[in-house]
Image (tube, one colour):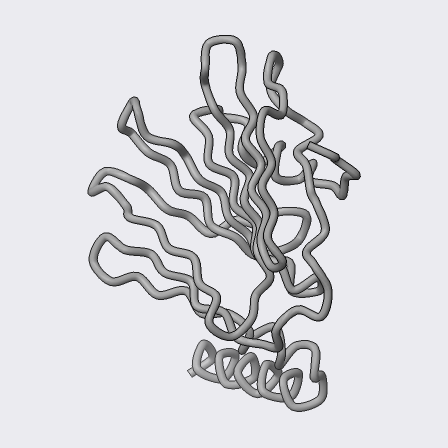
Length: 170
């Protein structure tokens, strides 16, 4: 009975927050993660961006990695970092808006856990396959952005927490 009462209070509190706070309501309804079999799919909702996406960079790169390529469109950006061995780290970011989505195919041995990156909700996907990347993805609802880092490196969370705006001309 006590557990049911606590659960009821939590549900009512969440409902009150959604009703009172438009920001909380927007954050909850802006994105949905759905897993079907080995496919993890993020569907985004919201207004289309009014301005081009800013450029971001990873500032806490593992030693020896440098930016080698940057591609940006109006609503998304991709940055590739490589080291002298040819190992890659990929940073992707996109505005969350109607019609935008991001998906991942998971291996049977991948493990996925909920995490927080600088207080924002995310997922950490670790691969046991030697040639596959680990992935960390998170949602910045305040900026209306979804970020993903794909890398063989173990420093995924530290890299994610180091993301910052840049003025790259590459």
